[in-house]
Image (cartoon, rainbow, N blue to C red; front, side, top):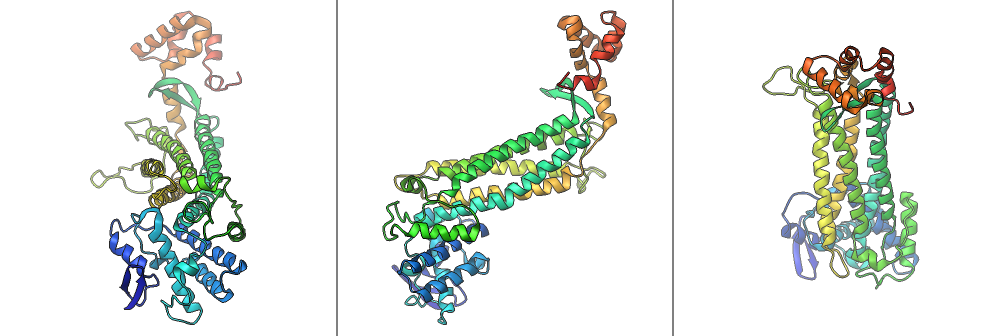
Length: 461
């Protein structure tokens, strides 16, 4: 064990631990959930600490050898080498002070080792005076949230959703000429092509992904250097630009200073906007999953127009049962993302005066939503959509027997007579075509022309 000291006194810490006194107190104070902020957030913190050290070195405020040691330690943290030493619970001190100090302490102690000294030599590398120089929890945690969320959207979410859209477009082309029964209000409606229905799914996802991209662009403005309340006390006017220059270099993303640093410090509305776009994406995915579950219902007592891949047995008691488990999984992800967004919205509304202190829970929820949407779309594509098949005979069975086909006769015999034909067909157990032919109200030529299923589903006719 070793002694670590902060402004409240001494704390005993395991010799192997790289964190310090403030982190140890936070672990004791907040034994809440066992959940920690994810790897991508820790990486973002480390990038900020390294960039700040170089900025302070260039401004002549930090000795080069100390700055280099901090940068080396921060790089190791960014790579994930010291993740086990980031131990603070998600439900922690407001604004993420404990999370910020966890990063400061781990990097400071590892930097001491880079200088050839033992952990805890705060005279060489101090977590506050050196690693946190020119910063506050209030600007660094907020900036880390923007970095982590933006990078996660672009590396994890956009590729997986784009691949899912491409898979739907492929199925759209494969089944572009297959006609099936359309349904509104869960009742028979006029025909639609399978390709049109699947194309609608792809189009919805494309629109929602566009929303996500637009919302994510709002995260590029970051207020590092605003320190505690946005005034930049102890940072200096050149510090933000130098930090952002390094972050642009290291990540490849065009980070910029906000138009109004005080607005950035006081609000997390840009993250809330991203969270809302994630919810919108989730809602579209949920509708698709619901449709697939319904269209694949059966195999003998349901619609059974679609066949989903059998990826695992469906029941512990009913032999041979196979369930739409990948669609069910997607539904559960959707409900969780809705919950994440509700938390982000409430926490965003909890901002007061110069700061929103709810950033740790905002960070966890928005990053969790990005993660499960990304991995969920990938699994959904690979284990469900790519193996999706359409039972063309079943599609033909339902559409040819539908009384909704009488709609096509409206232009010739009018709504009332068409409704009478539909009623007769249903009551007599015959098709609309058969009843129309027997009625004498419409010629065989008109029946063949108007009730051609492909013509009925071609919007150009």
